[in-house]
Image 1 (cartoon, rainbow, N blue to C red):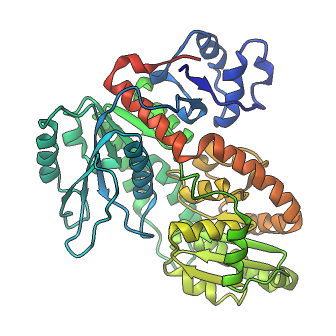
Image 2 (image 1 turned 180 degrees about the vertical axis):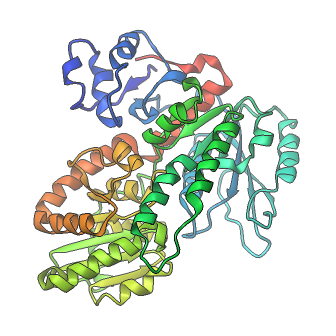
Image 3 (image 1 turned 45 degrees about the vertical axis):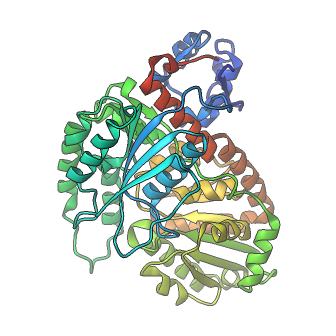
Length: 475
């Protein structure tokens, strides 16, 4: 079955219409930008594409949905496997991706940690095997232990076709010996410098000045050196892919952009779920707007910023406070501070996936005030697939891959004034405008951010790494 491109329209390619084949031209709406090499690449694409040098997110490509061409034996290194609602973005990515690959029939061996005091989850897949070890004092994989586990499995039956490490689950000192390895980066030091700058600008006079920016710059230098030891790199945002190629100087044929995806079967529009959720928490129908916030309620996720913005708005505009409800899902030190803002702020605590799906269906817009410039936040993708518009900080990973225009949401600079201005705009736009943006957000999500799209892209990359014949993409 031939590969084909996902259909869409692009505002940045209109001048190229006479040059580009329609199926490939249309997909560019879902890339972060138009590159000067578009014409050359697209003309070559009339025959086939070399996937290893494809400069856009592989999510824009459509791969065959049938059984995989080859059943792969895949080794996976991840420092922590998610447990219930207590999971960060890296762990959630590992869970979503590798369960999807297991469902596709691939043989997966997961090398991860497990605490003696905790129960480890089980799954109905005999082809999904966990190799557990105790974490180090710092919570990481014990490299000597997992390496021996890996070597034992690599010599049992057939060797691994491909090895995948989530971030530095497998350190470069070991990874350099694995030519068929791909590493997925969920945050790199260069992106973190932007976060440090934002937090320093937001620092109050009473807080101590941070000294880590110089250290962070040296961390970038360190990463530039040791990243070269990993054979293939997966960037989870368009911006990170650009940084890896330009700043970290990794050859383009070793850098591949695969955007994060979330389970489209769980996160989908379902009106009844939202109604039940509102009823459960006593949210009045008279409220004209319901804002949603979710994630860890900590400083670097931007909660001081939105807390202050809401506090100021409530003090200066009684009508806004009377007509808006804010739902906060998650736990952390800022939960108690939100509660102190008033009765229209409901702090729900951490929610399981099924409850999160109801949460998204109950809100009118999802707000992510993150100050972290790295990675690609899953909550934004979950909200979009649930048919909700999104509002987020204007950082490169978000504006380059998620909210690329006003059709599906809003962005703001990481300042109280910019956030207040955007909140007022959302309030004045009202539910009809937000519903239309939500529809556009879901369409974008279905094209790019589903677990199915992500898993298909990784599967093809892994096939390509294992056998060169899979590196050609036929239009």
